[in-house]
Length: 442
Image: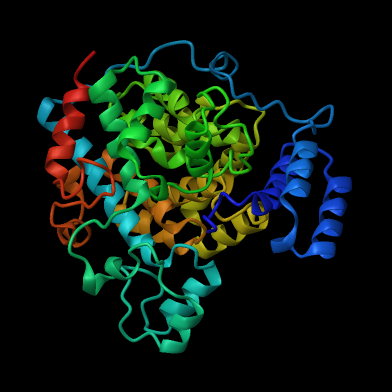
């Protein structure tokens, strides 16, 4: 039986790409791998040959002069702002409303992007133009789309059909929503001084392995094989800079309203379980941004401030600075997306860097409007449900539940599905109350 993301032969190709992005010279090993594949065919390569080849890959190191992109906490936090941020002045009711806005905004954005996850941007345009729903202004509908197009671009197999406008009954199960619930459980059980081992233990107890993907699935396997939390992210994990950690940022920000230092610290302890370098920075950046969403109302300032929690010489920081260099608020959205694809289109569609850039651009483009933000980011393609979720979360936290349009929130029916033990069919009200109880503890 082949399980997605775990087959070692498949991981070799991704590892070659990842090592090249990190600054390693993989040209000779790339040629060697192509020769091996041509001699056997990818599916027929003997296990011993694959094992030995992966050992060769593990010996590569970045070339001298490559960017320094640390994964260790001391190296990351050295450039953090020295001073603390002013405490939020929200009342208890306002704070709970903001947290509820984060949960609802994240869910609605995720649900919007869910049917078309994995569909390339040109495919999204082709699909939705066929039934006159492009540009996106509402939840995606399958009505009026020709069968031949749906064969070419099928809905996401993970609850994609259930997430179409005509079928929505609640927030469907999704990994992007499982992780805020999982991290809520971490804080409820272990408190704000939780460790990376606390996170790993919670994965084992609550999260079904096939509800994980890419880096999380490899890490899960490594943990089951007895590797500790110090090694679980680094052993045969070519997805270590992909988006998996970035989608786990939210709860840390909601639990530390106005306190990006604490949010970033929590995000690092979580991210390091499965990711390294830019994969970690994605979670740290958005956790800080979400913490600041309680106290900032200008998106450009918020993004600029959150970026102070990311190593300045990293590819991640360069990508967000590129976004900030654009006059996105005054440009047509399609033109902005074209620029982002030209700059970051070589990354895998679920890499951290390109998706973080797209989310940041969509937040700037929206000028404070929730619908514009989530629709723009989903129209941008790449990881549509994850990006809709993160964009919706920041907008929802900044605006609060009472200010979110009923058009996007009412269809959720205050209910969320989950594959995690103890969280299926909960209401958003309960999740927000439990998060609020964590947020007000010191």
